Image (cartoon, rainbow, N blue to C red; front, side, top):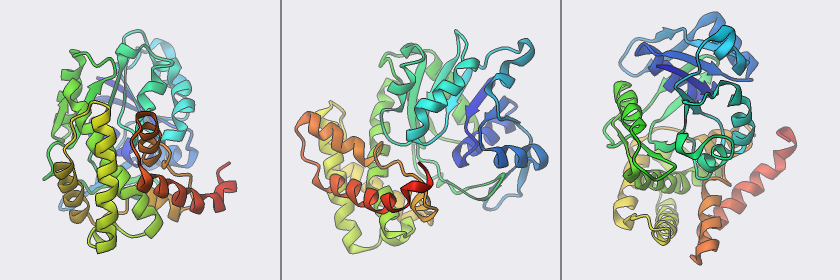
Length: 318
């Protein structure tokens, strides 16, 4: 399969590297010049505990047009892999390589990204999902897979049309071949909400505290906050018609963070003084709560605290 991934961040490189391993024609497309040049010159290094490092050489380019240059066919799949606040621009950059039969997938954090994609791409060609997959990157061109493969499922994907689609089978087989337990169907939207709850519970707390998952998830005060955030997320989901059981979701959240010696993306973003995805994660819960008449005071507090921190370095990313 010909696959274009819009981005060369940690998750883009992880999925792109795994897909390339399986023999797919993979194109990484990004404006991150230093990362692109490093991968072009030295390859993409993929590490995982207990295994030898892999050096992979997928296609990588600064320009989306290169993917279809010289009459080359359109990709069958385009993945949008960027921060939520970059989605509008990234989709616009991807348009030259989206053909009439190309499907577009987002596994980005938060909610609302698929709807943004559908403003430029037919809704029936858009798929959205969530991935409980973890990775770190501490140097250019090098990604470390830190995924806990004991969790099931790891990836859930649903069609934005909310109608069953044969391409769900294609996506499910693709990610299963990469070693990830995957479910792709209309029913997977429940898992997407569960991942949104996971992110809402952990990202803001980790960003504010600057602690790893394992440390803050074992703190009594954090335990109380995690439960309160989780309760609000489940209440909003249920008001949206998504069956999300509080006790089951809370257990999933605590088990996930307790097992991971990992600094989540918002923790890394605040540490490195980058813009965060707070508005597409906890901000989504707050926004939907207002629309549905569900109070979300703890999520709203998290949003304001993260903004308070990031506002002091905002001039670096404006």
